[in-house]
Image (tube, rainbow, N blue to C red; front, side, top):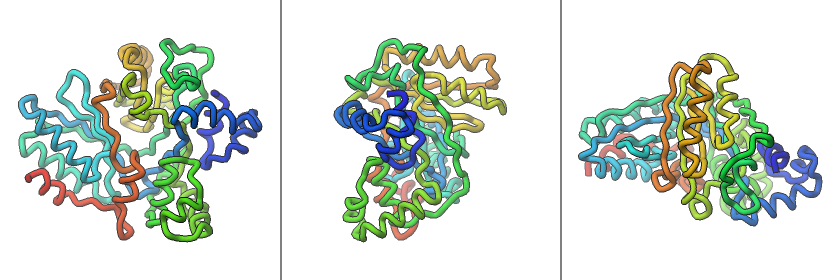
Length: 349
């Protein structure tokens, strides 16, 4: 399974013949995918380069006022509907929301107006915002930590079969997508095995046009960076899952990032300063993961770091790149639909 997932992660197109060749599994690769992935309700998905999709990422920590926590939560949920937030987590034991937001490139300052309004309205006592100037790399769960045969977490990962984890080299030059780019990216985000004919029928164009667009645009300019097996489906595993968010300030040493990648439960990483990493783990193992992070990061070249735990019922992933539905529906007329004033007017009502 390690060999299979490593080969999938180093791909941008789900070609099981190629995965079989590079993993050494040969014809068995298709059987592994069917038996250990598809049959469990899992699927390989495309990891998207947000910059190539015309989006800028940030991480925002909203500090809610205890007396107005419910109102703040309603306001954050409204941000979801207005396609500002990608994910929102409510930190356990705190009146704080961790928001990963994606806004059109060039409108980053405009987006701050929304957070400023929440503060001026007294719904939050303040916020902290960090621009994520890199592109995330997604990872499937380590087979030592996650049992693909049963679709459940393993209680104690073994140290002797850790997956190979390498950050994908990203092209950080922005690009401007068009309508077909977003349709194709939405389909590949839903399933990397999406058929060209099905995408063509959705877009109302020929299969030949989709195939050309896929090669020349989506793959040609690097909108898809890699593939990963998406296991975090609420209907399958969420009741036993916690999300841990790490915000850390490393020095220039790449070895410090490697320390984070060595943890079995790493799910996505944004290298840089600050570095942001998200972990998915059994709820029962959350505090053990935090202790492991502290052991690896204390004295390891990190100037500072902060860790937040969010149980499954405190996490929502409904925004732009996380949802293929809203990814397509929020791109109209050759641009992303985003209007900070419209969002603020809705909040006022």
